[in-house]
Length: 244
Image 1: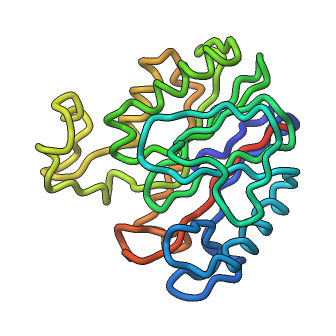
Image 2: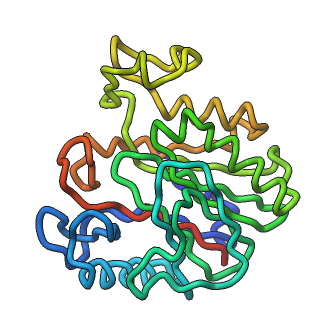
């Protein structure tokens, strides 16, 4: 497992994937579900989000109703997502250069990919499942930070959260779902390494390979995390990044 941020940046940024424990939701969402769209009691989700914000020391927690799309939103003002709704709709990426603002991605097998530019002092967090991989969300996030903050991709650090690993990323319909370029990430007859796909897309966008970190935890294998593939009806984990 590769922790993030690396040594030398811990006084500038906080990043954490919360596992499913330590919240108030009841089964099958037990316990720290932050997803409002999965059938859980909204009041329980609100309490869980407050737990997450407190665990980050966040003044504000920004989240979105995610749609497996490619929209990335610049957060200029502290917006409080603790009141019980996802402030933004149809957004799968968040970025900011404001301190104290927690950018939260909800996931249960998909990747949350965190970015930090130590030169411009900007951060981003994106939601990337297989659809996001096909859309090249990692590369789009690098380009969005370059446009919004003047970030140089060579300066940026990136981290891939606990998510579906190559051991369990089974796609029986891959011929219809994935482009031919993804064949290089096929590790068996119907399994793919999407961690490798993300690393390749980040490298293609100019992020240095030594600046790419991977949690290495498979959410399907590790029952401390929610997994839609494993459980079907389940909650969503929170990955949050915040500038200090």
